[in-house]
Image (tube, rainbow, N blue to C red; front, side):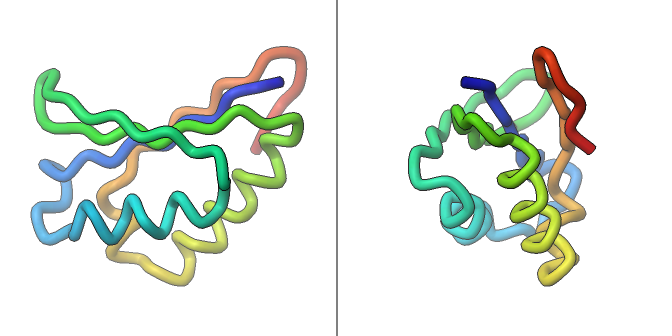
Length: 86
């Protein structure tokens, strides 16, 4: 299994509705885990273990294309072992 993590950074997009954004991101992976914290600004991580991170990343990209306001509050880090996700 591989991991895919999306990070919301509300400080970069003060108008973002964090609970609504988390709810939307959870729809792309039924096993999504959420954690929040404060390190050089507030963050919310939504992570998922998957055998196919490219499929989940594609679903997230479609979600972001449909909701540009959500995209402005995200910082994506594509981390993958053994293959490339783009």
